[in-house]
Length: 115
Length: 113
Image (tube, rainbow over all chains, first blue to last red; front, side):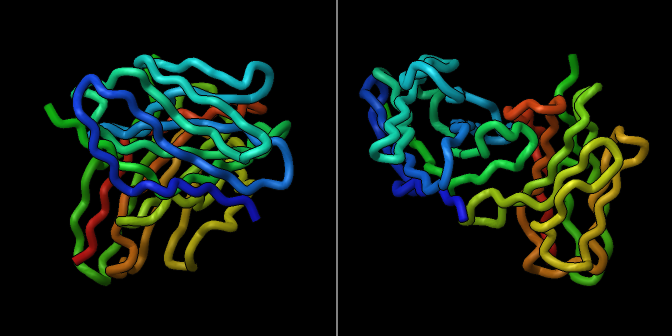
């Protein structure tokens, strides 16, 4: 069965520092890959997605993620974190070429930003 | 265009009571999904509608949960009777047919006391 692992439950970074959130997946086929963010009191917002093609994808709010098939990873990065990035981040996978299947999520990584 | 809307945003009920959560998907989206996040756990799939039909309800935890989608538009998720372990955040998402990306609502936080 497919699974998603986000090994870091909570990360604290200083404002202006770089950020990398890890995501590893276990899937028998080529997956669709997503990063969602949930800010306090808000719903899940899509940051970026990977379906095919260039393995480095750009998202909103200055985020990017790189798909590495050999490592089954899809890590999220941001070069300079802003205080407003404090939120919970979820990595998710969907079945490739079957657009209507449900997503499988990781447990999430909570990001705290300090001054 | 309005996004996915969920009602209520927060519900506190006593064990044994009934609660009904509502989801209004984005207009025209055939696919509607329910997910749930229990505290500290991952967001888990509950069920999937295509229009008014249940496509997959393999994630429904037990028969205390009943989901409906009237006329392929809005959906309701009823929990009857509610138990303490049903507490969590219930998310609804919708997408057009054949579209992998799902658009999520803000969630309903259910607390059973």
